[in-house]
Image (tube, rainbow, N blue to C red; front, side, top):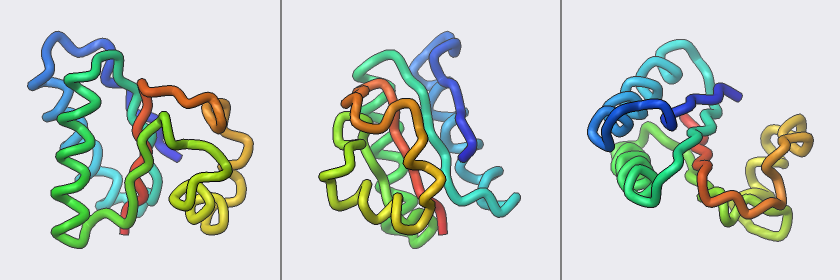
Length: 105
């Protein structure tokens, strides 16, 4: 899984642009999972919105909000079935609202 840290960026707009670039770059390189780290609700909302747009376009398979990243969530079960090595992720089960996970097609 590629981890993209958006916490250091100076503005919300910069974070969203960086997230979009990360999605495009990862897809081109064949990377199928990205975990975004963010530190504000605004960045979280906008990054997740951007990922949902890419999902409608058929470029993203799934999105998991950090607060839903737990073993009893259906999207997390899907991720763990597809990528069992992610069961060791340090954020699994911690309901960390400052992360977002995207699975790419």
